Length: 454
Image (cartoon, rainbow, N blue to C red; front, top):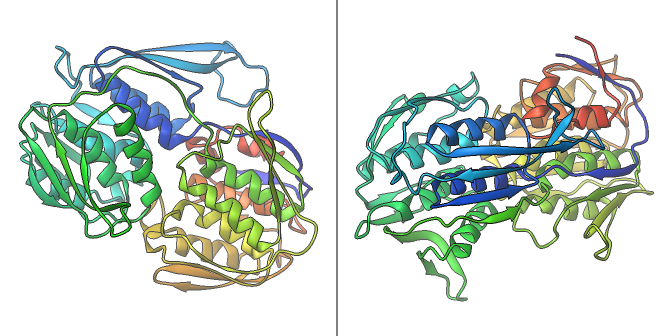
């Protein structure tokens, strides 16, 4: 579908949706737990719905709770109610007798695919995973090689879906390069459930997106699951080597999903582009999510970013700008998902902005480095594409040579980034594949006043 977005100043209060990364981890952990868990205020999106489907196929019993939708900020069912939580009865690490579904479709959710591949390797029945066209182009080869080294039978289309997995995991020592951290998170979630006496040892010669590993490890620590990792001379963990003994279990839990800094980047970018002020609600400044780095980026580019004290509904964050945006250099190795929002913000900055050390942005839903360069060129913005990043040569304003039609490339972050960019332009934007924004942020385009055209 296509939308048209008119230029306007973006201001007000925004309820930031729940974190996709936390929601999917909690869904899988609850599905593997012994007992009934409650996940409160989760993200209700296309990606998390795909994960719910996979968890149900793994034998988890999932009941959802809905309530009247007062602010229309979440997807609604036909009764006009929004999701407020799930109650999930887990399969106890596949120890509970279940009727396993063997053909699973993860849609567009790479996080679901990678984490669920390792989970499927815990049990002895073959399970086939597939997904949409983008998923079928995204390689899981390093993860599949590691699973094979642990005794799991894997069959794939040159590392891509459709992928068939058949366990059980027998443990051992493997090397796992991680251009995406999701490969390592997958083994960290599944390996503790191997039988007692089975030890998984993982060498990690490459690790991008380190904050997501810290997020995953926070769940292991909360559930008392033992693991060992090498230490740096400073005494801090060195994530280049892990030892994980089997024989543990995930415990039932009750937990609220925190708001998503990755999604918050888009209304924050809109505030930076148009001046704001925009107040973002629901974010936890102490959360492990790496994408809160975007707030520091905006500060360095000339925005005012201010946290409030804890109020009745927790802390809030306000982003505004009075002076010009200034180009800077940012290392996005730990936060590649910020590249689209950062690139459109940089288009409005004075001078060059270099987004560096982020080659893995090329293996997301799209090659985001190449796509951003192509689509920004339609707006009259010159970019220099590098193998591991992008330099945006900003001029402070955006004056497209003609009313642009941006190709969303079926990528939710590309669509949302250019939607934010449209607000500060001198002419409206049209954006294709707009429906893909619902992968992580349902309602975002409506928040910007988008007009749906087909």
